[in-house]
Image (cartoon, rainbow, N blue to C red; front, top):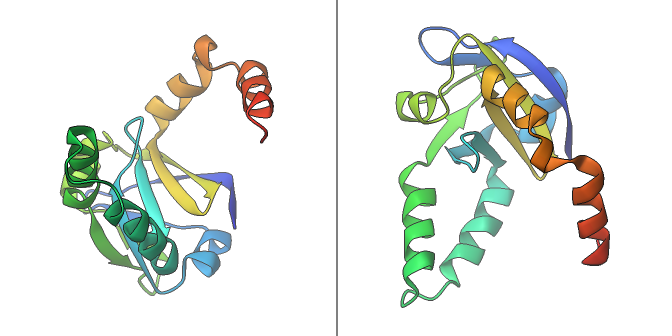
Length: 143
């Protein structure tokens, strides 16, 4: 399970150091794709396969389902960790997430998310996303 936050710089070739605690749970192979809120989702292979299976169940006749599946799969790329503990983020994902030198890598249970530090900081400052209010609504849903 992924949790916590780390800050590292991404270099001009799209290489990003992953903290050891994240590398261990990620394994040797993984899949990155366009996430929500302008971040990159990083799934270990087995979690990717589980997500893939869920998306295959969506009805092709539903326009929003087709759009989401296209979005999700078209941005996907396989990745691996190099000997220095880095991953290489493809250019299309770097551009999508507006990644510049300072980045934030967060653990979100079954996946990692890679954020531009600026976008992450703005996200956390958004008053409409008050943690207390969100938690209250989640508990009302039985979480």
